[in-house]
Amino acid sequence: MRKTWLEGFVWISSKTAPNNIEDCSSKIVETEDELKRALQGDVNRLLINKEILDQPLVQELKANRIEIYAYLVEEESELYKLIYWGVDGVITPNLETLKKRAEEALEEVDPKTIHEWMEKDEVFLVDVRAADEYEKEHLKNATLMPYKIFNPKYISAPENKKLVFCCQMGGRSHFAARHFLAAASPRPCYNLKGGINAWKKENLPLITE
Image 1: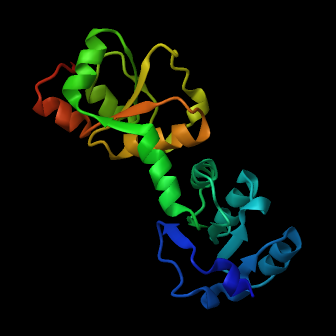
Image 2: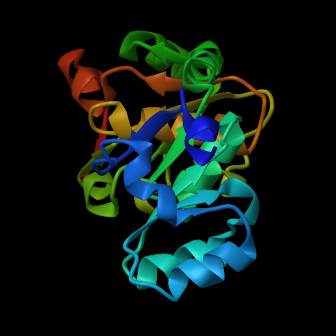
C-alpha cells in the first residue's frame, strides 16, 4: 500500500535516490511514533512525511548523518522551506507545476536592461555571492546577502523598486530569487542573466577594490 502512495512522485535531490521505493519501504515515516521506532534501528536514510518535519528535527537527523527525504510536498513554498532547512531532497507529484510557477514569477533580464533601470534609480539589487567575491568587484549599491546564509525575511526592498538578484554567473541568484518568491512575497523579481560575468562582457561599470 505504501508503495502505491508514492508512485508517480518525482525525486529532487542532491544525492542519488534509491532505485525503487521498495528499497526504502521499511524507512518510510508518517508519524512521530514511527520516527521514534525508525531511529532505534540502524538507518541512514528516511522518507518522512513533510507534516512532521521541522527545522530542529532536520538538524538533529543531519547531525546523526541520516539522509532526509520529505514526501507529499505539493507547494513551492514547502519545497524551498525544506531545502533551506537542509533536507537532502523531496518527493513531489507537482514538479512541473512548481517549475511553471517559478518561471512565471521570475524573469531573467539582460545586463543592459538592468543597467538602464539602475540609471533611473529603479532597482534594489541583492548580490548573493560570497563576501570575498563582493569585495573584489560588485555592482553599485548592491546589498550583499551570501547564498549560503540567504534568508528571504531579511530582504526589505521598497515596493517602488524592481528587486534584482545577481551573482557571478546567474545560477546562485536564480535559486535565491526562487526561494524569495516561494517563501516571502508574491511580488515579481528579476535575475541578472549571466551574472557579473555577462555584465563585464558588456563593459558596464563595476565598483572594484
